[in-house]
Length: 185
Ligand SMILES: [Cu+2]
Image (cartoon, rainbow, N blue to C red; front, side):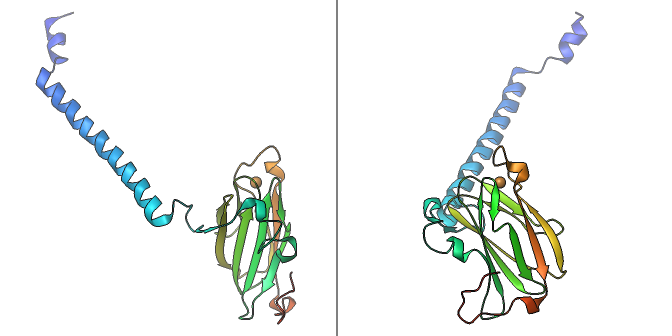
């Protein structure tokens, strides 16, 4: 090897160690930033997934409370808005056909009975994860009547590709407000 080649690759020892120290500082700063981010999210956001600050016990879902079978589906509220309650499980949606009125504020409340699922309404910006232990809430208003496909978009097991629901956006007249609050669509 020629003397020239040796010299060009040769940096003074101090310069190398200064460069190394700079990178050590960068790595330390990134580590501190990650730890601070986790600490803040635990302290202020209860370490929960975004928008899922309501928790629920997966074992209780079918037995009592908001997500018992008779309460699933679309419930019209006295103010004219709609609340849709869904349970996602391997490998289906309950209910699998969701009906909502057009041009109406809709609140979707979804829970998982087992593992992490998710749903999106194809052709809209509705897209959410459903994490066991939390209630996922999505607020939306559909301005076009029609049928939309709602697939699970989190790989949840061997039957994941068959896990999907159908959302039908229909005329407001088909969703009368029931003063007793019992009717589901
Ligand atoms: Cu799934």
